[in-house]
Image 1 (cartoon, one colour):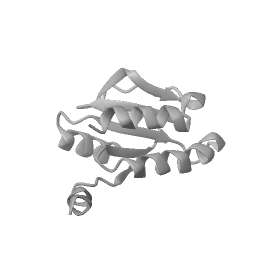
Image 2 (cartoon, one colour; image 1 turned 45 degrees about the horizontal axis):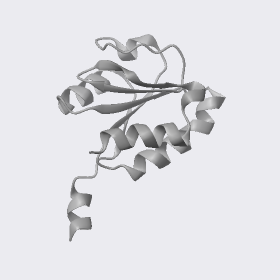
Image 3 (spheres, one colour; image 1 turned 90 degrees about the vertical axis):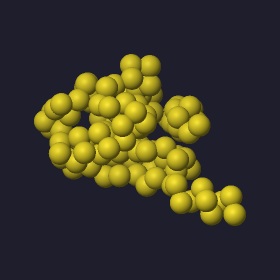
Length: 122
């Protein structure tokens, strides 16, 4: 019975392709922290990180995750996010980046992702 009720609240990884979708999703979350995963389809490092990120995200269904196909700066217009490169993982609330919870490129490991998701799964 507990498992069934937990499944009702499971949040899927939401794919975002443009600025309007990004704004709509995180504004809808209100004060709930959101894990944003910025990736580029043409980046070989992202090819390695994408499956790892999705695997860990699937293990924490209570955390809202937005997977953002980052193709240009305009995707993050209206937010406080700074994306220097992909892949990048940021925790944000209402479009405001948390400086302490940001992982970039080689910082994104299974251990660092699990620690981040564990922190926000409560």
